[in-house]
Length: 348
Image (cartoon, rainbow, N blue to C red; front, side, top):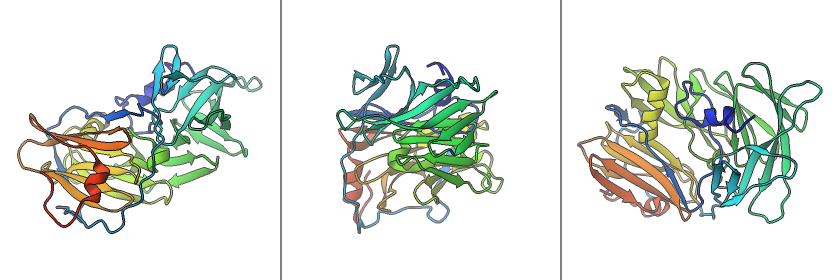
């Protein structure tokens, strides 16, 4: 696996198939999720909740400090918090893109001499602990064609068409709807998806920290209108799918649809859990949801030009920037925004 090999292709949002997800890292001080091209489309809130209202925060989870790392892929190698990452066992060929856990997962060349197939050791290291040793999670073997085989330490083998490194492990996807996650404990967890659901190509967060995978419902039942798609979030702890949102888009290709979703939906990790932000109700409302607390509130509500959003992480605080035409509105701390919600007026 050369650096320009599969991992770089997989990371591109211009992929033509909605398959796998991204992994681990971005600058620890500033992280952004940029929107894709604007689309002349309408969005719809969840069917059971067309006009979400602020909810009283009965129990907001206690915030924990994020161990976010800045991971960069440069010509000289991979850098973590501006320091070149080195493994004395060999050259680091691939690394997760995002990390809010203090860990990194990466691969090294580990050729299978007997089978004469390209193979790569998958290792993980706790960067928050000085002097920590790397842990081997298993081995990735490249089969003829595009198939991968992951060999776990316990001998279990998983077939995959695609994989994505996360901060604490990796996600493997087969036939677009068979998902396996190998986490910090090395245990392989399988998530058979319901008919119609596939893993989205848009995953701009650390799945190990958010514990959420973005799915797309491609079934005819979900395609209610021209080009309409439905997305959902798979909780990798419970195995349940929640936070279903429908977006009516005019773009027909999967790549164009995901570029649109990228501009109207985002997930940012915070100390009190992941927070989802979505443009809903025919693109006139920006709704913020605390996935762990269950609290949601309308951040901005104004008819006119469609809203488009960016989110990011700066100094441990998730922020939101929402644009409506030439006007921009911001929330500097999404955690504080949800914590301050009472049955009152939405911010505008």
